[in-house]
Picture (cartoon, rainbow, N blue to C red):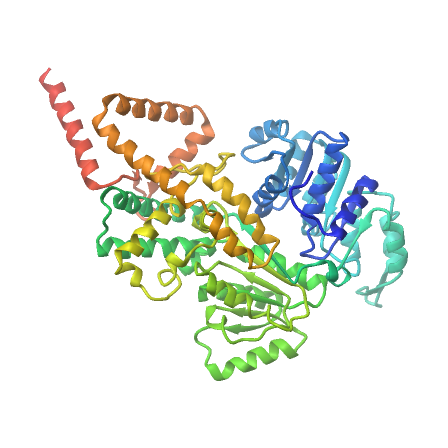
Length: 610
């Protein structure tokens, strides 16, 4: 049924939801509500109770759900996105799981008036805020035979929100709203809510449809450390800049593949482009402090809100970029959350005060740090670590984690790695499985001897042919143009499945994963690519075949308005200052462009003579 081992409390949650038919799983953050919802759907599918499932979640989690479903089950999942007409068609697609954002389903309900699904999953439902919002009202027009509602909001907080959530499961369970408020809310003379009452009675009313476990309740079942990779989408602005730099990297990789040589200038340019691509995975603010486009900051705040609402746990947040930590600090100031902030500009004598405050003050909930604080600090008072970005040197990553995961640690530790989806970050993670010693010293501020030793540089470039090149996703949702792409889908899909171990096991599995990385397959593919290019130069039939292949692919793209628009967006640029529009097409080198222009010149000359 599920391709993973479940903890006993997770099995209990699946059985509870299966028996209830419609239920709320309100486990504390980090206990695996997602896998319990998927497990319930799979159990109902096995018993032929349902033939489809609709998942509604925040926009940033759509592709996270898709990855989790396809990793843990044999079922297919499709993301319902695009314009309204496209989404209408996708709701009826043959895939068992359909995934849609709250905003999209709200717009669709306005037009379709209602939606029906056999099985409904609503994730992060507490983000609906209250039951009077348009999204919440629209969601109540979704008809389902069975449902699982996921929320990490505890029973002790925001009872009005709990009432709203209960409407998706059993609208009669808690009685009329006015009566519910009268029985549970204690107000001051001025009408301000000061406390709640009769909580045990409310819990008794909901015991057949709501299940909630805290980490301390199931601590003996949990491993000492749990690692989770959370894939976060980019904004359009981030994506455009990232792909522009990726195009340059692709050209340099192609140039190296063709000549097995890059000048020192090209090597430094390659390093710069790779570093800027990594920065863009976090925020455009790191490169350009006049703009700010990102999604990792808001996703981090959502995680922190869940932590703060769920109890008194403390969080450590790391980023390689000081400007990224600055953005988080600014948002924490807005929230009024006490935090300690360590970066390279903090003198060593002041660092002890930061750690003492974080350890001793209950109101100090967050320790925010660059990699300047990744060694020597003892932050065992924290139980959650968020990596806003992953260092490409595994040793640096483990140094971060060792700040809270040390000998004598009595808490269960959760490590959350934020990875920008469809980027160099994800390809590095999924394709090479942290096998990044080749990059040590280049992208993590170490020694740059790799640029002096050709043998090491050659190995790095072989890896970059996989990491830096764009990969075509199965669903085609993020296909974009970039030069000299090498199709490595089969290898990437295989390794993505293997990296799942990282989310459920400790670091001892890293060595095993390294052995399983299919380096030979990568080499074979790149060799085949090179040989096909040289063969085309001498084989007219193969050259014609490649030409027809290009034309047929172009025809398929132009037959779809959405694909055509993506093609136009990827090659057309507009100068915001001058308003001038230009076409940008990645090419291998200047010689190729010169050859094409010479050919056109000869054709035009021949046409004029006739």
